[in-house]
Length: 235
Image (cartoon, rainbow, N blue to C red; front, side, top):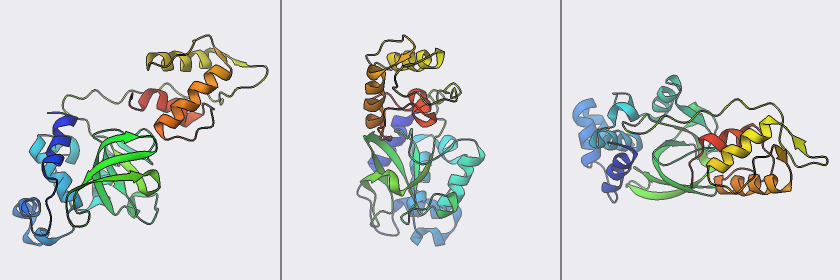
């Protein structure tokens, strides 16, 4: 049981369409006949979690059809991340088509299967009344919940942001905060010298990293880029 088993459970249902279907019927068998024909995006997430053995990790042992309640439960557990920064495969991603940014504005949900640049790849139920793959941008993502999957390591914690933005200037910024960030980027596989000086070479790595993770490519290491150096998936 893992992220991969959860994603595989979702992918096995691709092409399911119409209501009622076996996903909504399964949900209705436990929670009431009205759910057989109800909006079923989160019923899909619940079904995949049950089928993959990740019901406790993804749904906290509770069936969800109401996306707002599901996101709120992630928030209560300290597993809610607003926006799309750091989003990764296996995360449960929540959407607002009107561009809302609060949990109360959520209208839809899916599971992340991958990311590339500023795009998030998903499997979603009840999208055009079917289970289908979609490609989404950050503009419609309210946030995401990160389940504690059975065999997945806990999300790595970033050290506290040192409080100053690392930016290429003349004379160059120097310090332990620069060295800490440089060393982490080396650990992630980037070609960078951990000498504690933030010059053009470090700025070039920061910009390339930001572009890879869909962040603002300003070549400056502020709190978001700093955190992403530890928490964003290595690609």
